[in-house]
Length: 172
Length: 180
Image 1 (tube, rainbow over the protein chains, first blue to last red):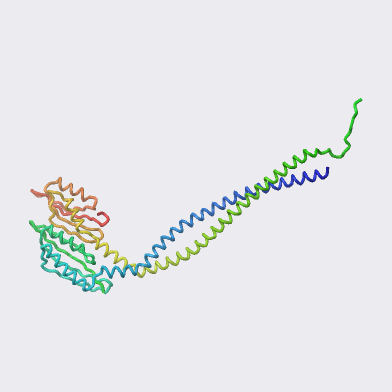
Image 2: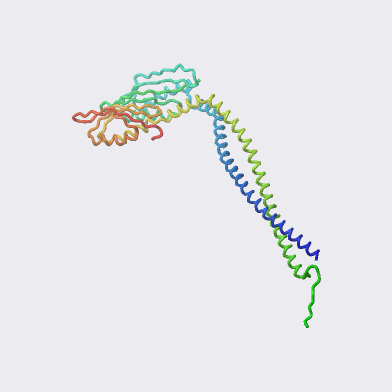
């Protein structure tokens, strides 16, 4: 009889132990789920940070490439003295092509010693509105860094008088 | 006379078969609970180990990227200081080069229908795309139709004079590159 009692007690003790262990494992799972949630939050925050890093890296790359880009821009668009001679010839060709005559074309060279020196070119024209518009279009098409700073048009009878201020940027 | 029998044992007599059956049920329950515990803990352990290693990797990456980000931000600040002015000047040149007088003239041709004549026009290549003009309109209706078209462009009417034949107006407005 004593043996049976010991066996029953042992079995009951083991049952209690395993039930407690099982309860503990479920509680542990719940706690781990909570901590997993915090890890997931951390991961989500990291993903956000990752986007910020990517943005910063892209900006960094842009700034890193900037000196080359600026050099390329100066090489391709800023006018050299040779280009300026071409521009003056182009201007005259463009005027002739649109049946326009400029009485005075004045060029004022800026004294700045920067990387691009401004040259202000001004002249007056008289012609039909269509010819003047075509002239503006033709000059605007050219890729080098010159453009009209301002245009003033006065209509008188059939013709239009125009005052044109151009700017050209000369490099070293 | 009925025979009376006494069980003089200290404890009751145990039925062996019944005991084995109950003990087996208890053992099975113990095994089931133990198995569930071991399964739960093993699964959680595996998951948590994988997640912790991923999380550790992420933390290391955050630390690395933070230090890299700081370095990059510092370099960007230095570059901005060095190249900022030249960049702004270059962007300004590009903006002015892309300024289209033709588009603005086209707009004016479309806006000033028949009955409106532009007498004087100044177009300026600046950021705001400032346009000043003096016009003559044959009728009030045509004039107000023009005002209506120019209203979204910050129309400012300087003065308006009505003569016998027409209405003369000096006005200004802005057509920036973004608006065309």
